[in-house]
Image 1 (cartoon, one colour):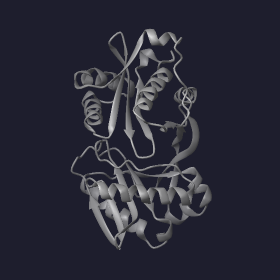
Image 2 (cartoon, rainbow, N blue to C red):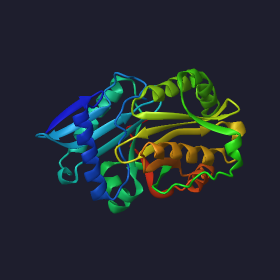
Image 3 (cartoon, rainbow, N blue to C red):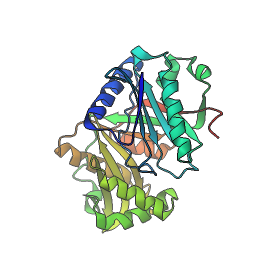
Image 4 (cartoon, rainbow, N blue to C red):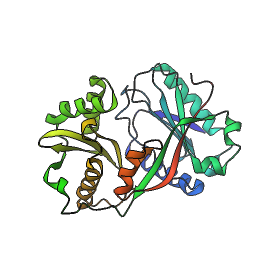
Length: 295
């Protein structure tokens, strides 16, 4: 068994990673894809991927999503080929990943799983010494039959959806900072990174040239994944979110996209209702896990 660390994946490695994920999803009846980019990581030189090979076959993959400063948590995404489990591959990959995280000053992390996997493997948590983070879970939602914007929708007269361009970055960052409570420098870096990512489309929602919303879309092989979506606080509760989602989908459909997905915090009923109204359905629940080692 060979363990390799990479900052970025080349095309061959991305293809192998996607093929591995498909094998895992088929075996476990799960839905989650890995985000195969380090574009949003705080340290751009930090090794993001740990790959485990049996000969030339990729049989294990770990991805570290570390988009915040070192005092924050790292999301650890880890998967092993169903035919190569119970051979210590996951342990070896995580031990390697832990050394990387500590090297960059990260001492807190949480593992990403799905409820269906834990239900199928009831002894898993005890065996690996992990506990569910009770206040932290997401619904995975997807649609191939989205709702359409009605021509008679009055919001057509006051709202415009446009691709994000560099001259709007400062405006979007200010709205993002207001919406999430992040420092303006953090919001600016996040927005710029999404704009510079070649596999990401970024959209803004305008009301009379004022930025009132933002969303990025990762265009993967199997789906377009929406992330970072927000409507600025003064404009919530007016149907802007549903309108925004519908308009983005219409634009993406014209470019050939067919399947759309996102995650929504289980406790955020307002956001969930926005996505349901746009035609999304809840397919799975993402669960986050911790051990005592992560402070």
